[in-house]
Length: 222
Ligand SMILES: C[C@@]1(CC(=O)O)C2=NC(=C\c3[nH]c(c(CCC(=O)O)c3CC(=O)O)Cc3[nH]c(c(CC(=O)O)c3CCC(=O)O)/C=C3\N/C(=C\2)[C@@H](CCC(=O)O)[C@]3(C)CC(=O)O)/[C@H]1CCC(=O)O
Ligand SMILES: NC(=O)c1ccc[n+]([C@@H]2O[C@H](COP(=O)([O-])OP(=O)(O)OC[C@H]3O[C@@H](n4cnc5c(N)ncnc54)[C@H](O)[C@@H]3O)[C@@H](O)[C@H]2O)c1
Image 1 (cartoon, rainbow, N blue to C red):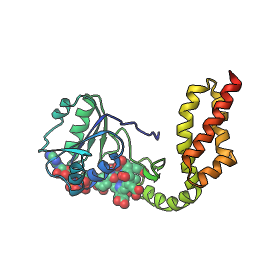
Image 2 (cartoon, helix red, strand yellow):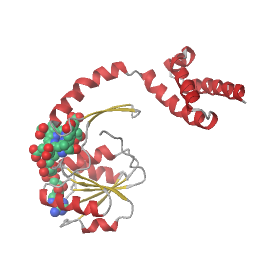
Image 3 (tube, helix red, strand yellow):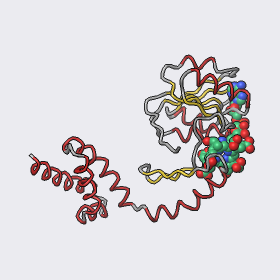
Image 4 (cartoon, rainbow, N blue to C red):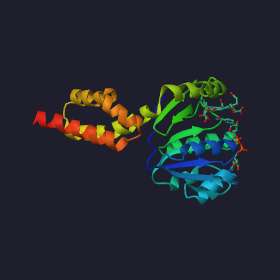
């Protein structure tokens, strides 16, 4: 099952700081979580992210997963060393600590796989997975699909996502009937005036217009 994990405010511990760990840490940046890297040597990019305040590093030789007990809001353990045995041990300790687990060399014991991701303006993410059958083919499909998606999902569509995010929150407060909320949100997608604001990049004006429309519906309802 493909899911979009919410890691906000939680601790993620990545053990190992080599090539693969670096890619996994990169995927965690921007997830609003606390990223802790533990390894006996740290890659250059991870050092840079540490200096920028995105990552905390602990340099030590890890023998087992005992140290994971020290974290109080651990949600995910990512074992990314080049030792299969150590990664297995870390997964076991992570499970004991009640967190999700992932091993870079072992899809069988991992709670999830990383799909190949196409991210459009950080607003829309498209994930491709072969569930471990062929990571290389996932990457190949990503490269093939990316230009097509960028044509299909336009800049205006991405602004509409932002508008929907704002108006959806308001509609939740104002309209109690889910059917009516959906109808209102749907009307924003097809409205030619909103469309033309978004084409000009005027998100705030589109929002102003949408708010007025919501007010009108509410007044009718009262
Ligand atoms: C999609 C992508 C996302 C990402 O990692 O960001 C991803 N691997 C990518 C590339 C890639 N990985 C590997 C190669 C070399 C060729 C090959 O072996 O095929 C290449 C190609 C390359 O390097 O170009 C080697 C490899 N990968 C795994 C193992 C271990 C094993 O299977 O046991 C080994 C053997 C290591 C060894 O030989 O020792 C395991 C996994 N890799 C996954 C994801 C998960 C399944 C996702 C799916 O099924 O779709 C899974 C199960 C777990 C996970 O990592 O989450 C990313 C493409 C990103 C992009 O291009 O956008
Ligand atoms: N999931 C994937 O997509 C994928 C792709 C390629 C490779 N792999 C697998 O990932 C594994 C790691 O590959 P890599 O290229 O990142 O290796 P690497 O050598 O670049 O990194 C290994 C890291 O583990 C650390 N480490 C090892 N033992 C340690 C210990 N006892 N204490 C602390 N730190 C320790 C090292 O310091 C290093 O930072 C390999 O087993 C490989 O098979 C997975």
